[in-house]
Amino acid sequence: MHLPALPRLPAVSYVMPVLNEEGFLERAVRTILDQDYAGEKEIVLALGPSTDRSNAIALSLAAEDGRVRLVENPERDIPAGLNRAIAASRYPIIVRVDAHSELTPDYTRLGVEILGSRHAANVGGIMRAAGASDVQRAIARGYNSPYGLGGGAYHGDGAAGEAESAYLGIFRREAIDAVGGYDREILRGEDWELNLRIRRAGGLVWFSPALGVTYWPRASFADLARQFFATGTWRAVLVRKYGRANPWRFFAPGALVLGLTASTGALVLLTIGVLPWASAWTVLLVPMAAYLAGIGVAVFRIPDQRGIRDRLLTATTLVTMHLSWGAGFLRGIVFGGGRIFGRGRVVDRSRV
Picture 1 (tube, rainbow, N blue to C red):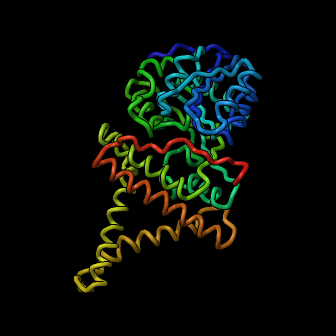
Picture 2: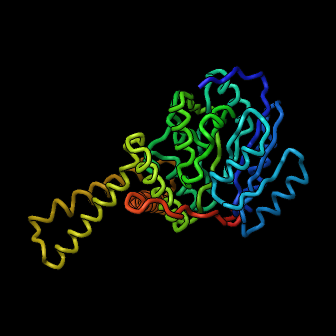
Picture 3: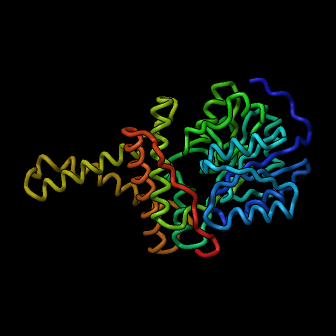
């Protein structure tokens, strides 16, 4: 992939899909407008058919600042919205942002510098989840820990270097154009899939822990379960499509659900006397005991917990993440993605 040298301060287009984000949208946009980057900027918001005040907030922001531009996204899906925003944007650097994320002030400046110095097609940084309520903080701890999401440099503080994917991303427009943009058929995991095609086309995806983004996750376990079931389902779709290009860690939650299902089935059969203890104990105990021990170790090691309640909430977060993701993965392997993707959030950060 041939990428020409960047000018010193290339103009930047931020692209953001918006659906039911009234509690997050204004703050997210203002962190973009407050970037310390000296080059020219614009923000293109792709507005889905929200049922809250998101579109009214977007209209107000656009009236207040001419750098904020609006396009419609009637399909409401994230990939379609990103493609529409990119098509409407004008500048050579594309920064993918989310309404529930907040950029550090130096994010764009540092990212563009790294993009040029590394001759990269895409650069991403650290996703640092945060929470306002006890439950949301527990969910954030799960996001920030490898025990929750199981890897990916952008969930920790890994060393800078070539990466498999990037959280959000600061792209060269030429790289996105070269691979045809986001795949509208991939409703979750769209970032990983786009970065895979960029890497296969010869582009470099680079991770730098110097770049930071605050992410506000779901604030209830029910919403978290729905989100992770959808994520697992669409990871299975990517496995069906790309096979061994997927890292092994994405298969672990599905295997976990199968193992725990076998343990539970054996327990039931043992209880009703169908299986004698001698023939059932290994199936019954090993998967379940190993998993519970792993949860115990994780809860002990994850930082920023205060007291028993925090640890119980952390354990609930991890189990919800693992089992929802794994169940979704198995569903997706068998049936494909369908329309399972977890439509827009409605949680207002100020109310939790």
